[in-house]
Image (cartoon, rainbow, N blue to C red; front, side, top):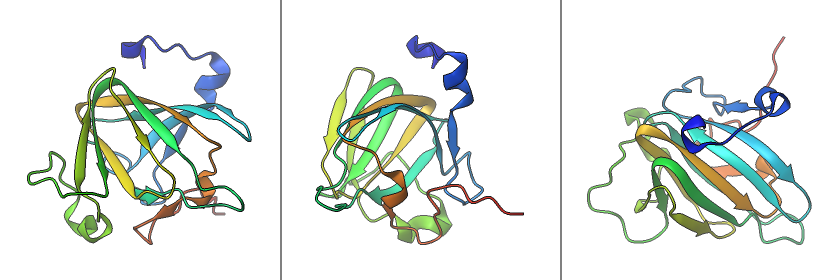
Length: 164
């Protein structure tokens, strides 16, 4: 985040979430994030990806009277490879782990460099990864309800589980 001149205060540093999705494979499947605001109408976060780290395929479904979360990703650092529904990219830049290939179903590749942004509409299957430098993404969205995200991989647990 220093590469992007993003300054976190001490309280924010203590609130960084390390999301491994219950898989225990954080260096390849997961992400780190800090949420700045999440109200009934708007959410802002920074997402940090280690080199070649993948955030697994998921979607933000309708909840109650809402369509689901709409989010705009703005690349701040590194390269972001975003995959969505659409025509399959012939030679995608990111390779997913062999044992998880069946949990990645969308392969239309959008490449974001610093300053590029892309809007993902509600209930759209997507996943993303960083290149060799890692990446920082600023996310602007409607209300975030991560606990309602639907992942393609049934082994994923979005929220941490504390075991005795």
